[in-house]
Picture 1 (tube, helix red, strand yellow):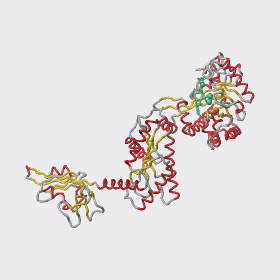
Picture 2 (cartoon, helix red, strand yellow):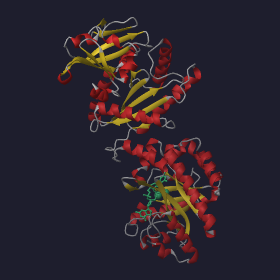
Picture 3 (cartoon, rainbow, N blue to C red):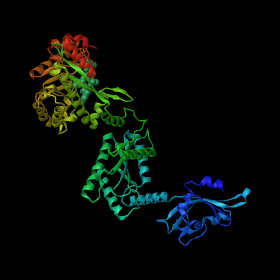
Picture 4 (tube, rainbow, N blue to C red):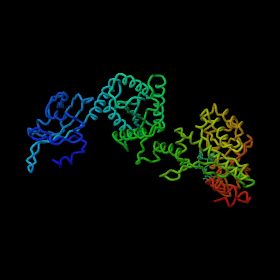
Length: 571
Ligand code: C2E
Ligand code: MG
Ligand code: MG
């Protein structure tokens, strides 16, 4: 029997061996922990304990000592029992496997029981079934129905090329343990939470409760990542408001995981697993309002949803950086300023130009933090040059701003804050906006632009001629500079009509009192052209491509030493 003792001593299941006379010859540690001094309950009912077999159909317990059958030479496997005893705080659910056996060398005849305590699993599944039936009563879909809806939604994505999202939520109440049987107090809280969630969700969203405090939400017809993250943020806000208006404190207690999918890449089960896994990650990151499952197979940047996720991270991870393109005085051929141009050093895709991500950032609203970062970084860089190179005092930095940024009420305050933080004179800043700003924000834009100008900042209209602004329209806006789009310079020497347009644009600018910057000066011919047109300044590959800040710094220093730097700068 020593061999058994060694084998089962530390086993987590209870193991008990008895001989054919019902005498226990071996019981391991786990069995003593489970039965205490009541091991005889395995043979008979005792004064303080009883072991009942559970009928699989009715779940009604029948008194049945497991060793009785084993010692009658019968074996059984994973049979369910309920242990009720006065020394236990609560009933224990057990599965027991019993085998009769003989050891010929020692003439041993008896049987062995292997006992597994499954109380924890029983409780969980009880809670789940309670939760499921409850869900039906309060009009939420149950888990099976939810999965079914996800499957159907995925089929729909096949037809109309949209995406779906699943949000997995875990709501924790303060001072309440997560695993609890439903009780009236919890029910009240639960109804409040469901109420809070329903306030955020649209009728077409599907809400399901899958465990005591866990929910799933299906969002169909997803067009952008921010649409989904906005729902997650609204859920936080809604539950926070609940905690302020009601007795229950939910603050900081919602963990949200998000998974995104379309039919071509995911099935319903995978999508649910991914949302759950992101929710677990969110539990580990208390500072995050939500976590999004990142599928390593789906980093295709042409997929706008994933590009959006990556771009949000890029801003946080500082994968974005600025290049600066010098702007030259046509007459003196010297640098008078720089235009900052954003780039994205994507960890897998390499260097991405703004055309690959600015339109999406504009569509999703990410342009607001991105644009603010560009503004601050540009101003900081110019200030640094001004502090280290005395001749850089007169330089300006020209920053591109998007129409979305002008739809914010706080734009003036933000610009002024940046100048204050960086300690840059407003005279050193030029803000470039395209004609779309004028069209998209036409009612309020005049006042905003005038206020910016009052601050001492210059305004430049970018890519002029490519939008829809009519000439009469233009005079209403307080610009200082007009940047003629490079498409007008292309072939202007051979295309007479283009030259005519170019000439009238320059004339128009003068009539409106604006300076002219010519974009896209690539050749000596272009340069001769804009010189003949008497444009004040220009930028283009002939002078310099957009450069890293260190290269621009070298160029400024070189100009200080050598006024004829123009030819050398053409690299
Ligand atoms: P943009 O403001 O008109 O910037 C000029 C673009 O023309 C830059 O392209 C520049 O690299 C390019 N360029 C300059 N000289 C020449 C030349 O001689 N020949 C040719 N073929 N191209 C030249 P980039 O950097 O790709 O930027 C494209 C556009 O992206 C910008 O046009 C601007 O509208 C937008 N953008 C760039 N950075 C930002 C930013 O920080 N915020 C916003 N809102 N938009 C930005
Ligand atoms: Mg520009
Ligand atoms: Mg431009």
